[in-house]
Length: 308
Ligand code: CP
Image (tube, rainbow, N blue to C red; front, top):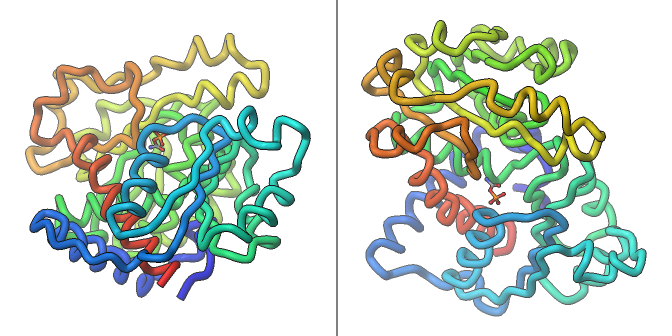
């Protein structure tokens, strides 16, 4: 079905529906303490050149809960032989001789696809710079399906750093697989997707429009997908001052909730800074912590698909 997962552009509806159904089955078994062990005798390496809380821990927990083994390095730029100048390709050539799958996060866009070319085992992209974060999109799709019962006919408002938000890029490709989705992208002009990217995906949606004001679109929203302005991407380009000007460009707070439909959900890949006030957390529409938990099941399902 799939060898590697480096982009959600590789995913079709058959693959996605298989993963979502498997995630639901594994979640039910997890809740009944009856998880199977399909990864017995399988080993995963998690190789993270950038920080992570959710992605690395949930992949490692998913592997162990399904009976697999883990080897791991966080801060790989410092704690692997990358510190001595080893290229990611050489690291992958070596590590792929030790394990059955590799989960990699790296600041360079396109690196997962690059190392997949030299890997003997499946490569899973856990975030490549401002490129993609496909496994986040799987858990986002799982969350939307669980909470709203569908992945079609949705009004999805994405807010914040549309340009650098890799989770947004990956989720857009999945939403494009289903009919009648309407996308609203809310950002300052500096944080918009390039026009050619919008043009390339526009035909897959009923409509896709860009906005600068959030309150105007809140009433026309089923999924409010909020993102952090990605400070690390500004730092890489020496644009710290611009980051300071943009970082709090949108803040979802208690008064935003008044504009949002009762059955809408608020998502965020996390970590959040100021863009969702903590006063929103108690609202039943705030889905972001259950979304993070869903990562365990979506990643279990993906590991089972790729490794067994
Ligand atoms: N959503 C996400 O990728 O979180 P982490 O950076 O903590 O893995």
